[in-house]
Image 1 (cartoon, rainbow, N blue to C red):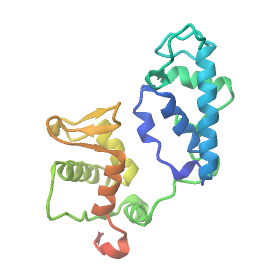
Image 2 (image 1 turned 120 degrees about the vertical axis):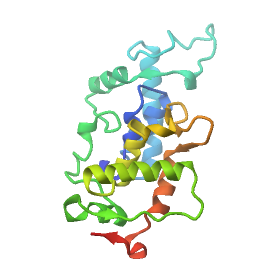
Image 3 (image 1 turned 90 degrees about the vertical axis):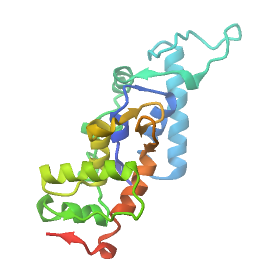
Image 4 (image 1 turned 45 degrees about the horizontal axis):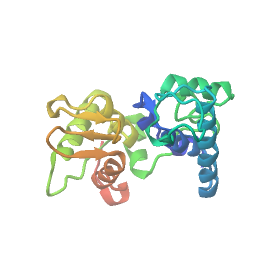
Length: 219
């Protein structure tokens, strides 16, 4: 598994990161589950040491972890995007969750698409796949449906999953008043429900099942 197996768009929305955010983003590079866990542990320890030694600026003022000082709440610490980028660059690292230019570099390939996404992008990106409408429609279906129709009218093809999520985060249909909650990493309709990336992925899979089951490719 290489960089192209992941969609990092959720990280592009963050202005500041927790240590956990950074560790999980960095560990996505690993090929095996054990390897990823090891990377998380290593980078977590390195980040803590850098903060303690003043080499990485965080939102909390920390000098050391001596017994005379109160315990450090590491989960409460936030690090600005530009600070963590400078720290990684000082180590000669450009992890793709922080550096878009590093994505897909290692393999030299385009992101891998599933069967439905390939269908949406075939014929030089001019294919439109008909959405499977559920019997019971909620607000989030309407949001997704409206965003897709605007995209299709503008681009001439159905957006793949990563494109659609980026639209919903950065430029959602304005009539719904959607906001992106950086803490929850979820889209929120005020006074209604929220939708995180996992829930969105499930919805996309239901609305656009594999083409072999869909048979609704409009040309």
